[in-house]
Length: 162
Image 1 (cartoon, one colour):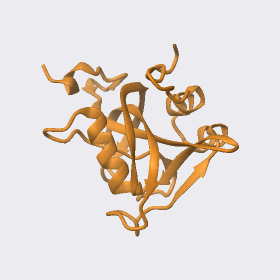
Image 2 (cartoon, rainbow, N blue to C red; image 1 turned 120 degrees about the vertical axis):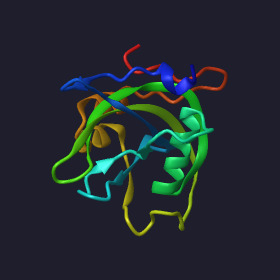
Image 3 (cartoon, helix red, strand yellow; image 1 turned 135 degrees about the vertical axis):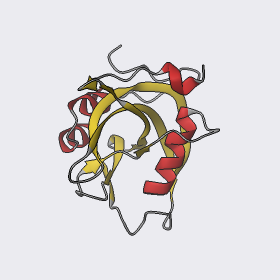
């Protein structure tokens, strides 16, 4: 069984199991404290974190880092320990949506590129964690953001809820 199979979806709906995705909680340390990078979704323009589907040959945290690059132009250091999971419904069309479970990984931002694949499709902005948590629509993601503690040298970040 691969690593992707080890992460159980947090919910199912109507008998359909949630589809797994991987997301990146992109962060930096500023003089004012930790800041979280949010991006806008392509369809509704609401604030979200970079996330996407599993990618063949990539570990979950590597897939999250790849999504952070494509959607936000983020380059940085990924922590391989999941911060937690949240659920949401991905709208596929006017008639179809699928429940998704997103495993979130912390990514310390080293650089933001000016040019990246989805630069013309999204906005990105830094927020204090309290503001970022208020802006996202998913309560479980808000809790992950509020409970985030940057890892110290030699210690991985704690999992949300610990």
